[in-house]
Image (cartoon, rainbow, N blue to C red; front, side):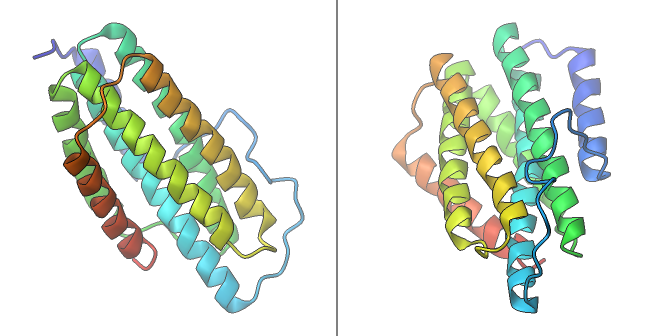
Length: 210
């Protein structure tokens, strides 16, 4: 069992408050912010908002996962890498939140539930050991990258602002997965990967609407 520091717990608690309080920030400019907003039809706008709400919820879960995994990671270097990835995921959170506002829509009403569930999953992954912890990151990022590729195909063609955000997020997620792989990730068993995909499917289906 790792020696959990008070500082790690405080940082994790602060991250939870900022994530759920909707005060995420970004040091990078939001992708597509300079693009002209194209008028979307009501159905296109509703669909784009639903997809961006799913992406925002995914980033809420990412904050929880990385926070939990950093708290229980044994290796300080791995803990530092999780913290760095979490900061970049916070930028994704800020970008998707801003885009939802531009689409006159809102984040999921179940974000507290999503955060709590993801934090619990992150703790379990972390307690399985650092290599499995990293393997969980690799599989998560692989599935997220696939999911974002699907959104690039599914977003309304005229919604260039949302597409710019999703494209940058996809690049960042691929880099996070590669980072975990290079750090010594151990591949997860096939049943675990299938279970993760099924759980993500439920989240996406619900967050699109609620």
